[in-house]
Length: 221
Length: 195
Image 1 (cartoon, rainbow over the protein chains, first blue to last red):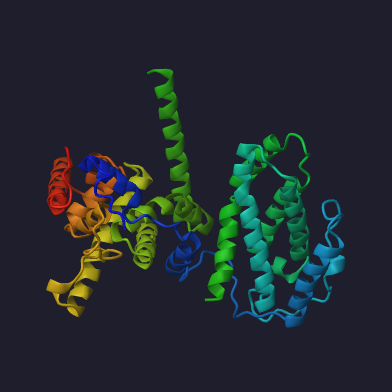
Image 2: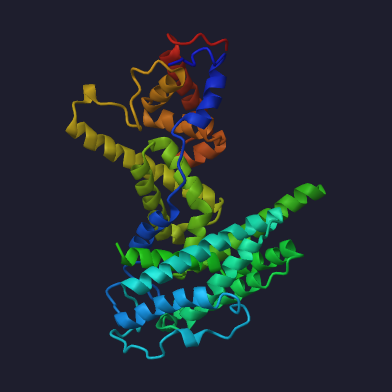
């Protein structure tokens, strides 16, 4: 192996190089670390009004499965009418389960997975917004993704998940934001995206999303 | 005051006002605000800690400890300095204490004479100068290593390092001087520097 001992004329140069190479930090595992912090700091006494999603509180499996199937069917059958359609209640089985706990939180494995996937995809989409706004690169793909996620949002809003006030509030905000993105005209997308990004900031949508994802993930720990 | 300077000062004031508002929300138990604060500062804190410990799990753990402490002590933050400065102080203290515990633990497990310096890997046999420097930095006493890491690797000023470590700026400068002298000596037989 070739040595790089001749590469550095001066000590200062070597130290400058070290700034790039010494213990080069990886991407910080923000969500993973937050789960630990959240558990330790807020876990013992979550403030009033905050409902943590727990896997121990299990809803009727049939309803959850129906929701997941409904989301899937909705994605394949009704993608085109998603933006302007009313909430897709027709895709969800109307019968609701009886609450098994006093908090009325309905979660089971299948439902958790669907919600988690939805939240993850939404985080990814929203995180790309500032960049797309900056580069003026708001693509058709972005609009298509938002349309798809909007359909899922509406399904979730009509599902037992919306009984959790925290999640419902988040879904309401997401519906608004996703509808804005889904309706973006092909021109002037950059300025519209700026406005949407501003809305996201004002309503703390991304941090709330991350908390919801962390809640579901920590319920699986 | 020149217009540019005024604008910078104004934006700083706005930042501080927003910061105060966020802190108030966190203190009232708002998890969303806490997550916002964490998102804004965690990458920098984690980066500094990782540079110092060079270990993924340890960096994660110490970053978590830093924020758990910060949230627990947030009520004592007076706002004299920026929140980032205060968090850096906690990070440095937490990391120094953490490393002390790790060293004590390792000392119990291995014969100190044969123990490797704490860091990711030992590169004693590696002829590469870059790797020798890394080993030499790893082997520095913590106070010198932290000073070198913060100044030469992460680019903090002496004033910032002094505040974070709770020492006088002069102490910080002399630590950097000492650290560099040790490093030069460690590399002397492998490189003939012109400076």
